[in-house]
Length: 337
Ligand code: RRO
Image (spheres, helix red, strand yellow):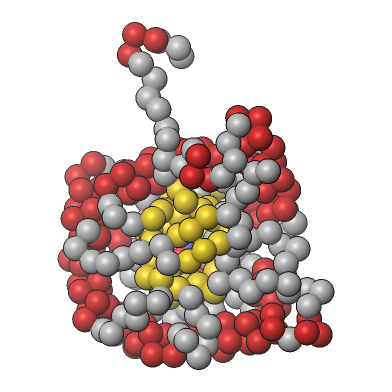
């Protein structure tokens, strides 16, 4: 019998798939839906939150193409404020324990709260509150998002190495509870020197997990028929997701899993079970699905998990750790391609 259960940092997951923050995880209905047993995810991740409610960017903020399985978004961090997500964690846990909902929620899913304050001070304020109340609110982990590409006038913290180091220094000056999983969501890196700077910072702190990668920032998708951009904010620039970003995601998963002490959650370009398999082979202990969930809905988790189990069976693997991080390199003399 093959299993997809896994462990990321301090959290045990019954399934290695989970939702990527931002996709169908903003409202109470969204989060309750992901929590359902029939949605084969190992954890619930919330939409990144700020101190206060945010409407997000104006106009058309999302576009995807079925043919190329790609997306562009400039949502601009619409969310209901951090207190809402803390309350949701508590409520979902209570519902899971309530016998009258047993047909919906047979198992308690861990809850990861994604945090993306508008300033360092906001991040610290939110984190302090989460650390303080995580037990009473059943919050299992934090994913501190250092990589939102869509806030007008604000750079991605993950690309500003001074600010990156500073937010981690301030975070770990707080009383971080031993029982909470401390995770980061990183932007994609491309240059080797940028990878090294990120490794040096991350390896100074007791971070449990890294989610690699967020959407690739500031791409441009156009509609040549109407000769215009497909989304409105920032003159059409936005975060690219889906199939076209898989190779960048795999490189980041591989680099961060080999060069840091953290468990890596793969994200980016996963639209099939074989994509999941490749992420795990590169070192991901679990994976997040974004664009494909927007395209196909929450049932896609079940479909992809079933197909992953079939790939594992055909290859003779019984569990995720049988192939996690076991990528080989093609021999130079082999000249296969
Ligand atoms: O809300 C967004 O525009 C957004 C966020 Br916070 C993020 O982290 N990544 C993304 O592609 N969009």
